[in-house]
Amino acid sequence: MGTDEQQVDGRSVRWEAHKRERRAAIIQAAIELTEAHPPGTDIHVQLIAKQAGIGRPVVYRHFADRDDLDRAVQRQSLQMLNDHVFAPGIAEGGLREVIERGVLRYVQWAHEHRALHRFAMRELPGKIDNPVRNAIRGISVQLKPLLLEGGKVLGVELDEDDAAMVDLVAFGVVSEVVSAVRLWLARGEDRKPDPEPLAYRLAQLIWYQLDGMAATRGGKLNPELSLSDLAGLFPASEN
Image (tube, rainbow, N blue to C red):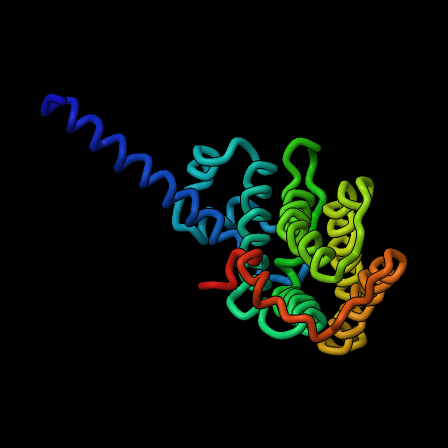
């Protein structure tokens, strides 16, 4: 490669890096403003641009429209939530303890980031790219091998339909927790119960569902079942 080509290529690399940094700064500004305002507040693009230290037209050099920006903010917010729930230590202890820990982490994050949680769970226009459904589907995919392997450990016989339903069951379980937390947060600042008892009871619901499904297939869940052999199925557990 000649000197001129190297210079052009170097400028292209730097420009792409600059665009990624600018885009990330806009998303971060939107997140900061969302967190600083009451849940449901409409944050105008002009305010986001000011927070990011740029002009409003610059925002639309990096995002096609407001929906594109909102989807990017949702994806980043949901990634923050996912990183919190699946942070190191999630798979330590027995099966029931893992469920309770995961639900508690989610409820606490939603409680501490109420405005951001509300924004992250919004249904945005368009069916092609829906960050909320994509995130829930992603978690269900993460849980699928755990449920399949758990069935083997318990000696539960899964027929063809059971095996095909595992990710759908996981999707349903995650969705019901998300829906319950959304309704809980909508009760306002005087909502009851507190985060810890809410998380404990939601974890109970999950446990009863999984235990019931195992029982109808000749198995029984052991709350002390160690997940140490399955810890690799959790993406962040070894960090």
